[in-house]
Length: 68
Image (cartoon, rainbow, N blue to C red; front, side):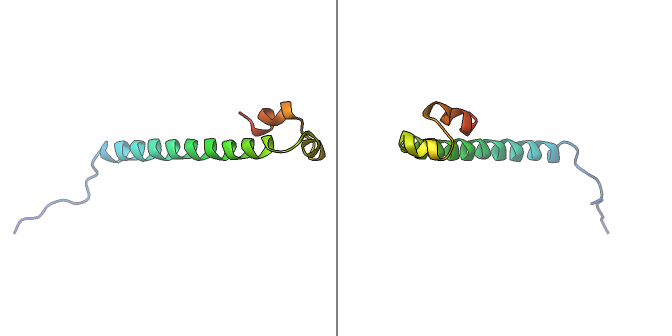
């Protein structure tokens, strides 16, 4: 009867898979963060100066508020 050992770990394969997964996760997170900042920037830019003043911002501080 033949047997094979299933308790051996395959060194390196989990590391590569983890790196690939982490790369795509980081890329997706970066795109999501960029899109959220874009939406916020567009919404704030559409406000009048008076509306911005009401929430404590000025037109020049929009980029600082978003944290570009």
